[in-house]
Image 1 (cartoon, rainbow, N blue to C red):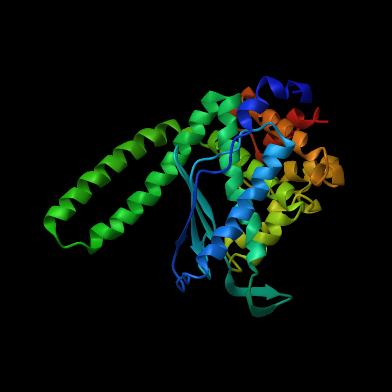
Image 2 (cartoon, rainbow, N blue to C red):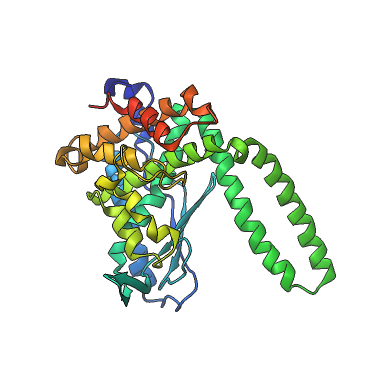
Length: 339
């Protein structure tokens, strides 16, 4: 869709909102956050949110999410699984993020223990906030697609909450409490099954739609960081060596030629499926400073969102035999008119 059509969807007077309602810092695991450090951390993440906000409000007409933010911080994170996540509701953005990461990495067959700097986890934070920006705006351009992402987020939330409740249930000996937990779990399972039919059983289409969300969030991290390798660098330094997240970091690098459409290693992972599109965006736009960090970056992001909207409605995506390479070809067709 042409750039001048952006105003059909985004009203500057409506979009340019005030700052987020509130920011709360919560400690997760590891050494406790000293009380005298909390003001620093509050300022640190407020500044990070401010960078995303400034980009969205100063350079685009997109909606900026202003609901309260809860940031769950791992002061020193060394879990081999996922390092960051977003749990979004109508009234709250709940972001889990490592402040530092400590663990082993392998460099030229040599293992060494490293501790990342806080700034090296920031692209992950921008990425998680990018999800919130995407979901706030996708409802403006496509209410049906917005409904899909709300259901998918709720499916993820139910999974997390039911697993947490199961741990409490297993540790509880009080029969009356166990009965209450069983009733709550039954409600979770019923809601999960109904959502799973609507959302999760879309199979490839769900991977495509969630992959679109991941692509946009990575693009936010790149544009705010003004670095094409922002996400791949952050994932490499802040995840355990040998895990799938660490091994797949190159998929998140917009400038990596191994992601070229003609030679990439196909993947249906939601984080990886649009790697050829990342490389396409780099080759045509993001290797030029005016798109990565200059005056065209904001309009570029808006046009990407509109292209993702039209792509998500493309009937070719409903073909059960479609491959990851074919999916990228379809998306790139929707991107060719971006200026």
